[in-house]
Image 1 (spheres, rainbow, N blue to C red):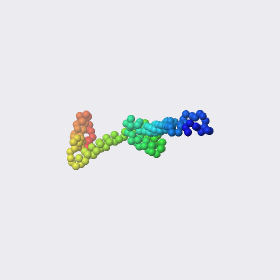
Image 2 (tube, one colour; image 1 turned 90 degrees about the vertical axis):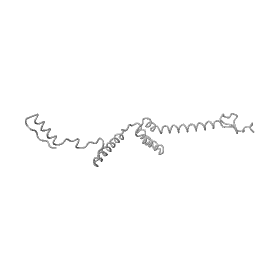
Image 3 (tube, one colour; image 1 turned 180 degrees about the vertical axis):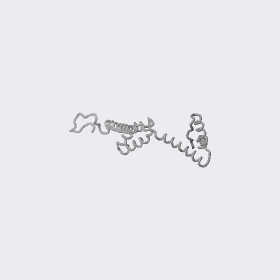
Image 4 (tube, rainbow, N blue to C red; image 1 turned 135 degrees about the vertical axis):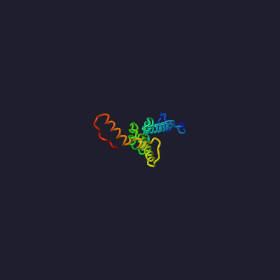
Length: 161
């Protein structure tokens, strides 16, 4: 049966047609190319999709987590606006407001802690009372009078504190 072809068939058969029972080489090559192309394009898509995240991570941006969330939203919702927003945020340097605000908060806590100790009558280390800072009124008055007497003959106005 293998020796006699169909009477209507031509005598010349193309090379990609296989005989029954043999492996189809063209099918195997095409299937491997399709699987390789799908894997390659998927890898390219995911690498391109995580580009803003990798840029923000490499440059140690403050907004790295926001960029990562936008990339994930763009991946799952297929909304390209999220991806473009993430790309823009990855390239922009946002000012660091957190560090100065933490320093201000820490200073205010130290001031509040020192003030609370003074209100309770406790001495806090490094705290200066008003009595130590402000001069006594009689010392100011006598100093002004001495300066007035030494600089000119006419007395100056007396300063009361």
